[in-house]
Length: 96
Image 1 (cartoon, rainbow, N blue to C red):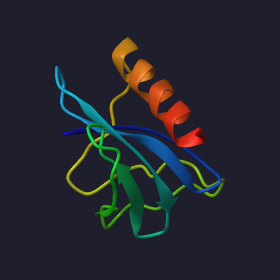
Image 2: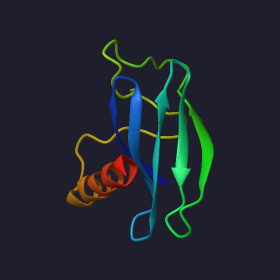
Image 3: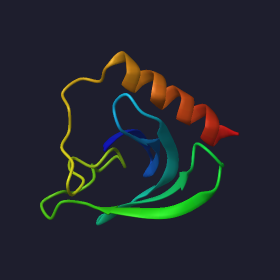
């Protein structure tokens, strides 16, 4: 599973997805210990809570930016065009 997200002032918006598959949008909060998200199921629009711990050595940036490491995930240097499209779609979904 991949995550693409943006974080502003500790508020995250993004998607959990598998390449060449569907994706589920989420919104939530980044704390000092976890990403606490509400995931919106792409098929039936139901919402459920989900948390991803920050790796033990990770601290969110002072400006409330994205965490540098979610446990079990690693950061990519660049985002693909598909990553950008998924993120834009989820930002629109969450804004509604």
